[in-house]
Amino acid sequence: MDFNKIYQTVKEEEISNRMVKHSTIKSLVSKLQSDFKVREIGQSVLGKEIFSIEFGEGKRNIILWSQMHGNESTATAAIFDILNLFSSQKKSSLISGLSRDFKITFVPMLNPDGAKNWTRVNALNIDLNRDAVAKVAPESNILWNLIEKLNPEYSFNLHDQRNIFNVGNTNKTATISFLSASFDETRSMNSDRELTMSLISEMNKSLQEFIPGCVGRYTDEFYPTATGDNLHKLGYKNILIESGTYMKDPERQVTRKANYIAILKAFVVISKGVSTKYTKDYLNIPNNSKKLYDLIIRNIVVELNDVKTSVDFGIMYNEKPNEYYSEMIKHSKIENIGDLSQFIGLEEIDAKQTVFNDGVKKYAVLNQVANFKIGENIIIQNGEISKS
Picture (tube, one colour):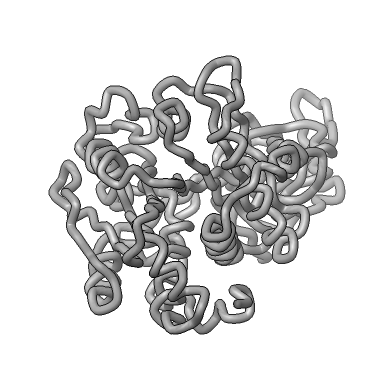
């Protein structure tokens, strides 16, 4: 089955951007009850329902969860795309075979309170991805109780990463980053890590056909309280997928499709049996680097005490939905000033030696809000570019 070719017929239309509401999850879940087993498995601190959606009748368990960090919603959309594929293609040999052999459990939006506030943390300001040992958050206990109940063969921890990551020494965005987490400080290897590394390698091969060069490898530094690290420590095979940006894709719809392709590829490989022969290929996936900015202004002149010099500005956005969850509001800051020739902008402007002017002074300071003019024509207002 060509997952890429069929994608537009299964893409969930109720989710068109990163602003996924809990009410949308409830609406979508209610529509799935005829084809899947839908359960309310608990509630958040503020009483919002957390759901699981089960596909298949088999004895081999796989579990996936998204929005453990509330403002990381890309994979949530991909989950519903995958579920739509399962519904529409349930009579195909591939999907019926998966249904026969597996029970695949999806938990979209583990942290609905964080989603509402567009924050990583839950309503008690706890990072659920660093609560794997203490388990003080109710949402953490909901997830871990489900994992212990299912004893999954594989698990997938689905996240988003900031727009700062590129792939290795290239100018490619880290649209997808993978990790087979370490289970100790020495980053030891065992059979579970070898299998997850090999599986990631096969997922990467599929993605190279879709987003060539845009797959990176996340750092495997050991975090004692992190979810993936502790899953591997306890003998559960886990794969971390970090959704990043793609050029001219601010709502991460390309990244959403990349999740869909990679996860479905993983299901196919698991069904056939994961071999460790591709373990070394995992180490050939380039590490993430941090060379991206949302916007780079190049060759802009700053002036102070009669000293003029040409510099570049690296600007990053902090985005948050408005109170109606209808529009993403940008808050931008100048995070770097100087020679940024080794950095990449998702968007770039050549100021052509025009003098900086923010209405008060002719020089910029770090962490200054990005509101200024470039010459007489170009205006930067919270990262939005307009011409007067």
